[in-house]
Amino acid sequence: MDDFYREHILDHYRNPRNFGHLDTPTVTFEDRNPLCGDEIRIELLVDDTGCVADVRFSGKGCAISQAATSMLTESLRGQKLTDIAVLPKEQILDDLGVGMGITPARMKCALLGLKVVKSAVLGEIARWPDEE
Amino acid sequence: MSSYALSSPLASANNTVDLIRSNFPILHKPTSNGKRLVYLDSAASSQKPQVVIDRLVRYYSEENANIHRGVYELAERATQAFEDARETLRRFINAASSAEVIWTRNTTEAINLVASSWGRHNLKAGDAILLSALEHHSNLVPWQVLAAETGAELRFIPVTREGRHVLDNLDQLLNGAKLVALTQVSNTFGTITPLDQIVQHAKAAGAVVLIDGAQSLPHMRVDVQALGVDFFTASAHKMCGPTGIGFLWGKRALLEAMPPYMTGGDMISKVTYTESTYNELPWKFEAGTSNIADAIAFGTAIEYLEHIGMDWITQHEQELTRYALDRLFALEPRGLNIIGPTDMQARGGVISFTFADIHPHDLASLLSTDGVCIRAGHHCTMPLMHQMSLTATARASFYLYNDRDDVDVLLESLEKAARIFKIR
Image (tube, rainbow over all chains, first blue to last red; front, side, top):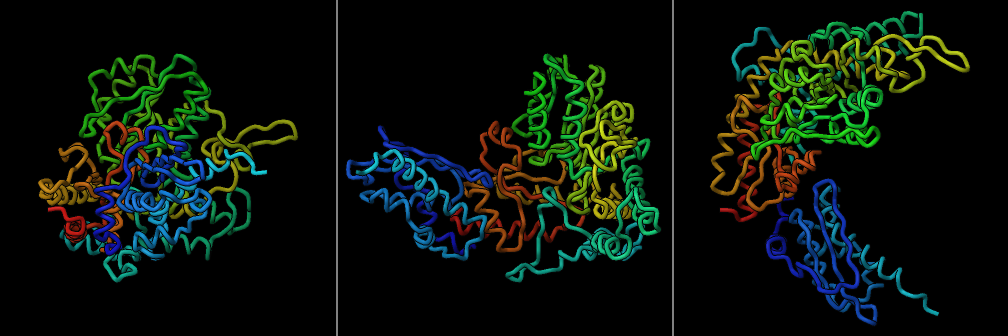
């Protein structure tokens, strides 16, 4: 576990990217991991084509949850919501460099950001009018 | 019955802890990466000595039968062992009668029993329930539910930044209080509640007093009659006993007047299709087949603790906590922050701390690779953590089988975490 805390994770933990708030988000969602008290709030600005135009996150928690969310937000701009909704968890674990060796308890930390992003995206997609 | 190698009175301190450690098989099993297990989470659950494990096996191998029903010899032996354990517990806490000792699953169930049975029949709108700001969720949520049901008001004895009770307005807080429910030792900060003073004022105000003894009974001598309280609760698994068994002690007159908490078999005296009369104490509150094996092994755990000596355990933990605090204080310039009383007279063997900007959860993960088990999180005291502007702390807690080597490994591991997180 100690080799999980590599340079890039500590960098994202201490200098999170896209941290803060949007003035007029299209959709927001927040959730927590009751085990450790990690909290993540995600705010997305969605354009007319159903793609992410801008993103911010806020929250507090362990290095794993905060770094994973920071890295995830870096990859969201320009992506289709429908693609984000099916993002595999392996991508998060690859970005973190932790692989599947992570313990089940810490897996919840690693994937909290993805869970919140997907919840926001699915909530937004559910509001879209049915295509005829 | 003594499969543990200990002679009383105990000889030299180092030798004693080594002997005690030899009674706990799990402490000699290396972790998956080959480290010595440094178990510093006894406030969550203690390890079990071989005698307790053996007692469970013996019950299921040689004595298993349902109690209070069978007239055959095996059932009578099971019943006898079960009631003997109750008597052992009665003696341990110095209750006046074993009729006042009721088995529950744990402390939480014992508190729920009182809230549900005593509370619903004695509280009404306008009454107050007084707790402290330190309470575990198990001694908070049941009273929240009761307050919502009855219209009673919840009040709290405030605590300082050090986690110590502020008693300046105690009599004001007690005005109209029908119930005072307090933990004897805080699971989060280790604070020992100044019960002498609070109980005296609470009784003068006419309040019924319940003590959550989950964090005290494993570590110190408790005499429920000397405490002058009405209810006392604790769990076996934090005091060398099995999970799934705990108890409620209550004063007989209060218990007699309380309606049953759960109903069904074993708690009845006579049943017709339309109505029933209830069994006498303590079985009135023990509906259904009890946790027989674990109650019996709980009795063995108590005998084990008595054999070591509760005074020895208290003193050993105090010395170890002092040693750990001194070593942790040396890390203060690097951002280690101890939360809780620094006065040894006011605290037990629970140390809550944060370390620079390392999240406690990350710290617990890193320490785990060195075989060190600490707790990280809100410790089931979310309002308290919020009030102290903390989201989580790391917590190390000690018991009879911990020694200075454990503390030294903890410190080495903290140094390693500091290196990984580049804290100078």
